Length: 178
Image 1: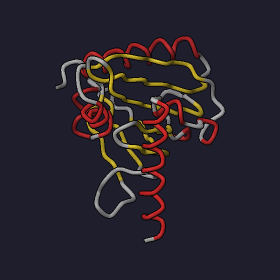
Image 2 (image 1 turned 180 degrees about the vertical axis):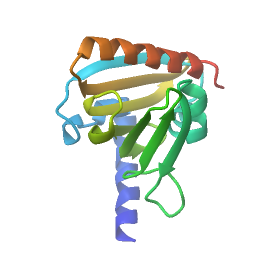
Image 3 (image 1 turned 45 degrees about the horizontal axis):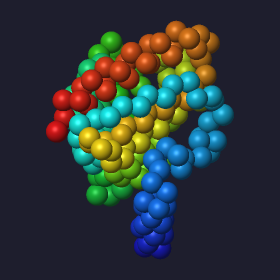
């Protein structure tokens, strides 16, 4: 019960910080808690949808299948009894090419954003220290989305190019949401 109270208190404090500074969730994340890998990609887009819809599209397993055309199935093993995703949830993405991507939710601040890390031992693309940060905030015409990818790889330029293409495809799908 005490940890639940502390989580609500921390979430309220976090929301106040974001409102006061008018900054994105990604501006508040201390990435060094999860990786020493360098920032390789930052994608920023304006999505014609409210921040909560954008957050939902990038966090709900069924919506993720629609946004990420290369994902066939997403399963989540949440730590919470109510079935909600939260810090510690393990997410498995079955990709259309047969590969499996395993991720852990390491920070969760709906509807502002969340941070996930790839499980190195099972990463199908050979990425090391992979951490993704997704942020969504109100913008003049919908939401401002910032998606950051931190990782190391034996061929960073090729991996960066492949990921940028995949991320751009997801953003295009997001543009169709309302």
